Length: 216
Image 1 (cartoon, rainbow, N blue to C red):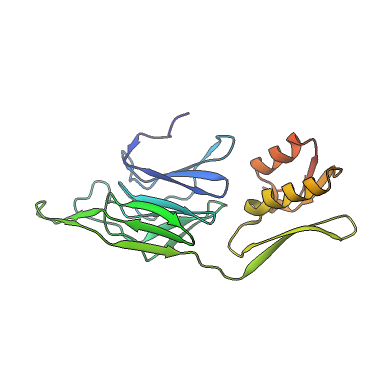
Image 2: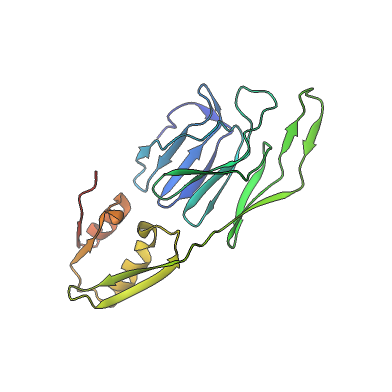
């Protein structure tokens, strides 16, 4: 298994059932993002808004957040902001972020924390080293009830998550609880949001049938 192009000083984070590798210094602009699913199948999501050499990354509630870094090939230029990918590998941006390279990222509770790093002045002699921490807060816009019913519409199980958790991410919890309580279930009927390689493999390996909508 090889990264599609030669990189160094890139970083990784998880979004849903994907691991994303992003940024770095390479022969391209340093904005390449590559994603691998649970079967190690590689896809190429939308690129970063700007190249990031030595960025920081963190995984928060099914989202991958990339920030900081140096613009590859540009001395003393820092992209700022942040690139955020959801479980469907759709990129959104944020004006908040680091203006530094070599920072670190982690998660605690509902926060993604990014700290440290440094910036070089145009003379190349002055270095600003940071001892501050930037925080991205988990934004909950309501809640969602992921519910499993039988063919008559009676509720078998429900799992409540923040509204920004994708259906496919919540599937395992609902599925495991339902099949533990009702092992006689043979067929799972779901919409196209649940048609992912991980879910298909999980259901089929259990000897059950997944009936879902056509998805391009």
